[in-house]
Length: 244
Length: 248
Image (cartoon, rainbow over all chains, first blue to last red; front, side, top):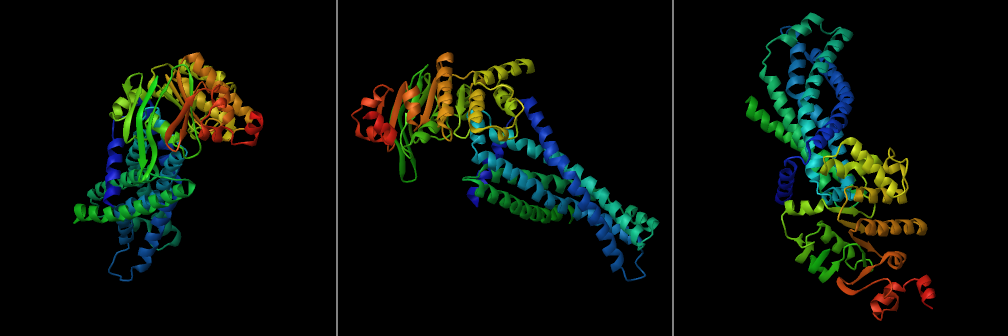
């Protein structure tokens, strides 16, 4: 475990060196921006709308006491989406989608000698392959999470309107009530940390593959499992540090 | 010229290279031959810096390459072209982008200049109108030729080819061999070819290094190899029915 951590830190040192060529790095950023960012919008949108709708319906159907105002449905949906569902759940989804993609892409490059080809050309392969992925993930995942929060709240509203469980003014009043702007900051901090975990851990596991296609598959699975566990672990730490 | 002096390499208990010393001459096609497991791939990987030898020195035109910093290695690596066994073309790039890659990384050429150079290199390896095809869309022989074009695009001083004929039919293999030989003489570069294909040995072997059980067992050229008295080399050279019949 310590050896693995040491190898991970050494790889991070290689990754965060100055890129060999600025224009090439910017082109790579654009490629990853589409592959890791834009291509994830669809799944994030679908999951967010449904999650928001489910949270709203669950909350509305579980409020039994007449003393609790129905605006609590909007309030709860907002708090759930901002504090946990969007930053953590969407990051877990991205760990599956983006993490496995990164690990299998880099792992395949390793077993087909493409990484060796980069190295013998005098290119720093860790920097060339992984830094753009980390950069794009850390820049674009917060955008995805904001998008997810907004869509989740819309999903909640649509569910309220369609089911008739909560009136729209009540739901919107709940969304606006007792808003603490720090919750957004908290969500963004978590998202950036999780994005770094997903890209760097998956990149590391892909980069260190040895063998053939079976090992690439294993690395891809490991990347999802390791990223997911680390996301939950750091979620706990960050919640303790930032909210308690 | 590449000088290899007393190279030793072990993996655990297994000694793969034992005091290997040789020189790869400029303007010549230098071959490393030997059976599978004889250490020829490890020797080549030591030469291109993918494996660090336990002992010994490798120098490129009197510039040390082994046991030096990564930065020093990178300056020499920029003068290398390497043809990997499977081609190692970048899947995400088309043929043109693959060949242009070293130019993008290490030159300040304009796009037009780079395109001219790419087309020149592709034409040199007899590939026309394939610029926009991806590696998955071309044959094994074409992949090797694209890989050669990429290797020579940045005008290297040293060309390394790891089993350039593996997986190719005899006719295509001959074309690749001929191409490597022509490029070596045309650009006066130091070429090292790792092979166990006897056709290649007899066709382009201007300087041959035979490795046996991790040791340099014999050196010579394509003319002297057929008349060797070395038993291990004879066993290797005349291991096929075809070569035995030819000898008779």
